[in-house]
Amino acid sequence: MNSSNDLEKNRELEKANRILQKKLDRCESDRKQLEMDIAAKEFLLKQVISELQCSQQDLARRSEELQITLQNLQNMQAQMLQSEKMSALGQIVAGVAHEINNPVNFIHGNIKHLEEYNENMVSLLELYGRHFPNVPTEIQVLKDDIDLEFIKADFLKVLESMIIGSERIREIVVSLRNFSRLDEAEFKLVNIHEGIDSTLLILQHRLQATLKRPEILVFKDYGNLPNIECYASQLNQVFMNILANAIDALEEKTFKKTIAKITIRTSVINSNWIEIVIADNGVGIPKSIQTEIFNPFFTTKSVGKGTGMGLAISYQIICEKHNGKLDCFSSIAQGTEFNIKIPIEQPRLN
Ligand SMILES: Nc1ncnc2c1ncn2[C@@H]1O[C@H](COP(=O)(O)OP(=O)(O)OP(=O)(O)O)[C@@H](O)[C@H]1O
Ligand SMILES: [Mg+2]
Image (cartoon, rainbow, N blue to C red; front, side, top):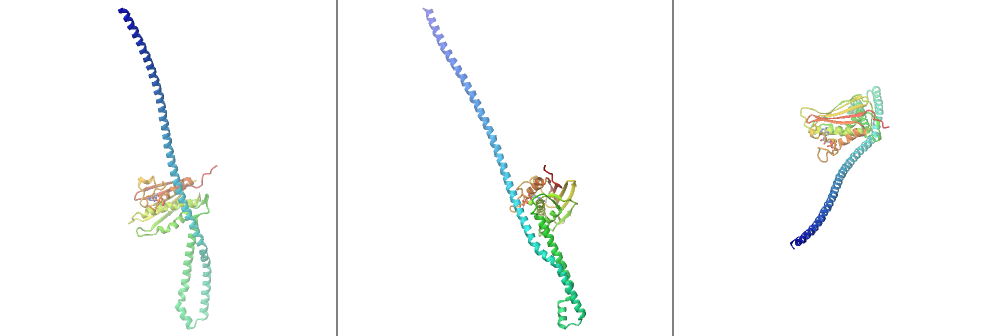
């Protein structure tokens, strides 16, 4: 009896064991499936994260590109404005030169006739004097009144100063034309010294003494330069920007014992390079901003006084358009020196 009971129990236990084993097997396979699912999801998640990171980088790159494009656009706009301004100035200058040219030529051309007429009239008067020494009182009174002897001497002086004046105006007209050079849209062989001189002439009024500072003296040390292949009006624009900056820097300094000066030196460096140095003994540029002065819009001047484009444009004209070099050396309170190097002949594109 007992043994048959045990047998029965044993069978039941075995059955329960089998059921449990099956459940265990099923659980095991479920676990494996779950693990596989999790691994697949993890893989997917990692993929999504890496794609997200990629697109994030892409976005950052694009926004950087956009930033650069925007900056370029702003630069371009400013450069266009500046060159528009310069070309407008060039046009005005050329127009004024043209308008002055005709009348001054009338004056200049007629002076030699005046000289001749005067000589003839004086000879005639002298002849009268010799043949009619005793003139009526009325004529003698007028002669004394107008001081004929003085008029004779002074008339020549007046003519002389008219000749000097009209020659000076003619020089100014040539300089103004030189400065504007509107006709020259391509590389031409140009006398650099003429360009510097006409730019100085246009800035002449700014060199004169003011209440705050003495007259700015300009020292020229011109070398024996050949004609240079360049865009003349663009180079004049560079001289204008650098000289105007030098005057500004001299304006900011107080001069008690020293003189305010700008020195311009030109020289040939070798068979294909020349150098133009423009130096001032103005306030100088602090070391901390020396690297920034060629950046567009960088200015230390008050709003409305400086746009911060002068040197940026100059750099572009010298380095990009003329394949040259533009450097600046400066120490505070001592002054600043701009060093322009340009090829005598432009490299030929084949
Ligand atoms: N000779 C100089 N001496 C001292 N500082 C100078 C000199 N030349 C340039 N700088 C400095 O460099 C800055 C940039 O010059 P830049 O000619 O580009 O602009 P700006 O003179 O300020 O304005 P603008 O566009 O009207 O010329 C000036 O604001 C000034 O601080
Ligand atoms: Mg300037």
